[in-house]
Image 1 (cartoon, rainbow over the protein chains, first blue to last red):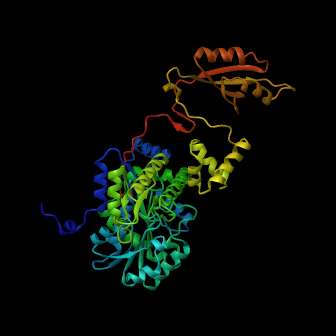
Image 2 (image 1 turned 120 degrees about the vertical axis):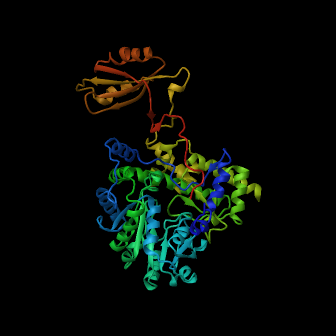
Image 3 (image 1 turned 60 degrees about the vertical axis):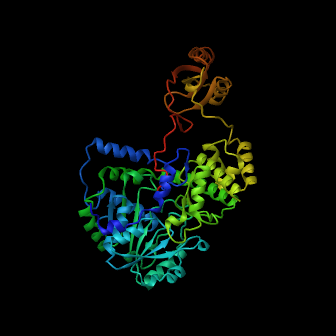
Length: 380
Length: 162
């Protein structure tokens, strides 16, 4: 069958290769997983089951159940974000759909979209599918992978139309302080950039609260915030996210959403209501556990001589492997059966690093880091 | 969170963590962890370290029961005194003063059902303060010490994902 040029032009994800290599073996400890190892809180799961038993299997409003949108808006007060649940909130099928809708609603063909890298792999293809052109803004290990005005200027982002901002960051685990965010916000105001802020890991920060670019002065009206239930509530497979933003942007996104998705799946919306009502304690427990693992992993990598900055969020560490990251990851998998993802998969600036997910049990993390230490010793 | 609490949170999840690993997980140094453990033990916050055992999977395992015990107190005898006498029996695994319809909940561990019923009827029931006992044998344990008793949960996540 003839395929569209658009489809043909989409590159194969670099992560695919490592997935296949890891899947080919059955003795692998994987530190390559980009989702929580917990299950969704039981209360949320029972709410989903209960909704099915009550026959709640029809569409919801395009924008999502009103009860859920109200809870989402309430929930975001904790980030000092204030959005109207009626026209500034849109429930989507995963945060991924929200990102896609934001690109389609905000990007015209030929527009330039600045993306800091290394970062989550879907933004580039999403921008291209929307007809935009990606402008890469490398972030630097020296800045602990925070986005700076200097790196935006150096990459020529002043000419861009839109910026994608993903903090806490996948794959680096980097977070940004209010002061660092203020600098980026000032650049966006000065250069008239709108922003898609993917804040899916906002609930997973360690030691400092999440800082959202949307709460910087003058940024609310030019920012679409994307978030969801996948990471904080361990609900990846339930596919539920949302977007918050000025009503004209949310209206535009909803117009696309109503034709392409109609509404987000109903069952997870019931689970999400319950999650927001009653699962704060479980999220706090997961955050405490991630934090213990984070400290263990970072200290073990530094002990074995792979420099690792202290990641402030998400569930990734990003050690410097001191050379070719793809070769390192392949050899490590081959020699020790530990899967990590080469940093270069996540774009410019990621080379020479490894994405290590600590969303796996403490026991496996210890075993995996022991094996990596052996690998590093034997290699040196 | 203070150091002792952080160490306690780690130990409560896995008492076999060694000091270096606790240090790594909490961001404390090893000396501080050792000092925190000493303090927790010295202050009787931590009374001991035990395995969470599924006795049903052990050949010649143990029988467990929960006994409800009602007592009548007098001027000389309070709950403390009664508890002290009951707790001295090695068969008593756990002893709690509880609110509600009865006074003490006693968890009893024995080799056989006869052991347990003999213990309750011959040792506990005859105590002068004890007015009533009701023994519930544990038929099946699904979760204990915060640990779900089940065969390992298969991790069905993709081994590598973005």
